[in-house]
Image (cartoon, rainbow, N blue to C red; front, top):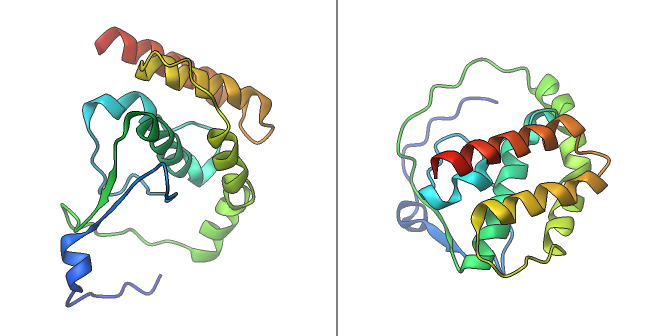
Length: 156
């Protein structure tokens, strides 16, 4: 919020850290993120969940990554981002719903059982079907996810 300028980074910050999604939960956003092609179906940004679309997507990514033994690497940024002006209070108001539900969403994902086919799109469809039980995930998000996965299936 105060636009700090960073002049140096610790050794850990320069080399980054790797997390195992089977053991560690974290979230990331869309700013300056990269992922392997296989994870594209899991990186859907659902409409209707406010500023938490990327946070929810990161949790879905981690859930399918855990099934496949994939890890997340957090390192130095690839690019510099000049942020536009923000109203921190307005941003906070837009994030309340996500703050109230992110832990619940992560717990729901933890309890999902997959059929063992190791099919990324089928696994993502299964996740979004489970979201139908969650009152904080709007129907429009689930419908959009289904359409997105149809598109992913046609191009992957």
